[in-house]
Image (tube, rainbow, N blue to C red):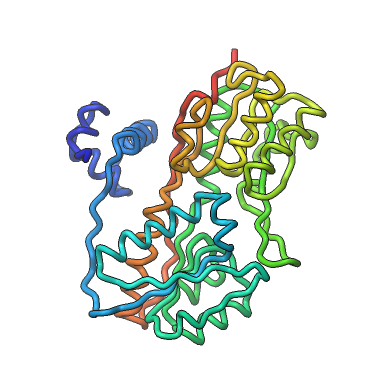
Length: 334
């Protein structure tokens, strides 16, 4: 297993600097490029930060509610890795986990959670569903959504900062025109949830006169939608760079480009979002924004355990930092 000294040696910095960067020390005064370099090397070397496990009551039980079915989970590793992070930390802390998925009829069978001490809700939920969670336990932590930051603890990505990192990189490449393949998420048969990446990214393109409606498409966060939407865009116009809302869609876009005999990155650069475990094995390996999904799951369980022990403390909204991992699916322009 990689150690701090291994990262420090490869990055050409001190062990103390590596430790402070990986601990998100806000008082550390080093360039952002150095921070990104350290985090990238840590990821490449498989470094895992040790988590301090709090004391727990014997036989403490926690429920996980996921807002998608087990079948849907297979289409997007993002939520799978959050769940695995929870389960890994639960094993360390001696906590028992009970998991509930959304059924195919878009409802939840919460009976298996009747004896849990707290709930981690992963995804987006309707107000009526949250009321049902509260009937089981008032100790609830949300991951990837903020239904009410005044009432509930939540672990979320800082999407505005994340998109800014991607945009800064894109502007450095000087590649235009720029396409965007975004996604909707289905809360139920009647409610679609738009994603914040699209809002922030398109606003930024418009401010810089880089927005082209012909190069914008939105579907669901699936590989087949990335494939289908990339083909639609190519039928209208060829972009120089495509930013996809997640890695699964980016994988589909890569396939569509390959079938059209368009080389990546020589003809078109592709950027994803999440940096799932398969992204480095795409053809070519995918440039993507790394989201520490397992850490989000671990942090969710630690936050919930603290809340179960101290139910009167104010809820906290925790923003998870991200960084861009540059691989071979992108190039710089002339």
